[in-house]
Amino acid sequence: RNEPLKKERPKWKSDYPMTDGQLRSKRDEFWDTAPAFEGRKEIWDALKAAAYAIECNDHELAQAIVDGASITLPHGKHNSVKWCFTTCS
Image (cartoon, rainbow, N blue to C red; front, side, top):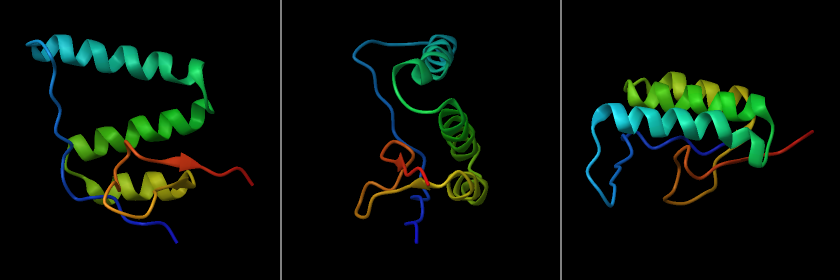
């Protein structure tokens, strides 16, 4: 059984000030390039959708996305989309 996601929005900080537009651009760049480094694109797409759901405070949808994609959350205090992995069947 999967551990539930934390019901809190992740906190983010930068070493230098960023506008909302710059932050959105960095996020888009991350999601566009992440599948090229490791992992399956459909899992990255699911993580992106879950992260967006959390950003919109829809934790139930985020949990459903994570569960439906068989993304495993480790036990302990780090139950967020930042600390997850998949298992292939």
